[in-house]
Length: 160
Image (cartoon, rainbow, N blue to C red; front, top):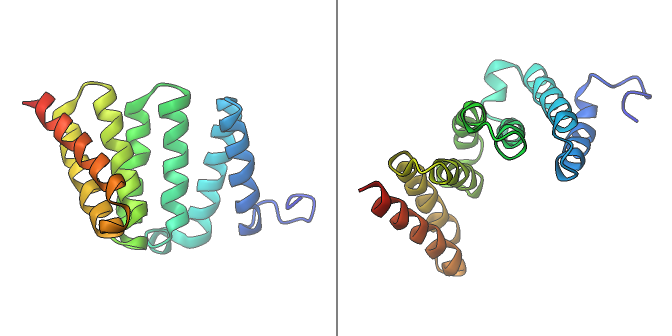
């Protein structure tokens, strides 16, 4: 619809690209998902510029979404890690080092390393996730925070 309105390359198309990319991803149509998610990322980077993009949570989300296609859709964690690690400083700047957004991203990276039995590399990411979730959820959602702490301890044991 944004393209038909003559706004296909403007920021107005960002939300549509996000939704279309997600639909393709959940339908396991990874090539199409990647196409839309990369286009969304390029659009956000162009719209906010280099400095502005470092402070925009949607940019962190877009990096993460592209990484998810490489990781979950194509089984290429190393390529996904490139996007995830670009997302981390953006998420920290946009939402804070101890935010839910940053915590989820660090947790995803930890899980990726753990799934590949690279436990020592998973530990610092789990530690960052636990710190963020403890700060964000505290006692309100203790079971969520304890689950992340349990995963951290498992990775530490296996790394030793």
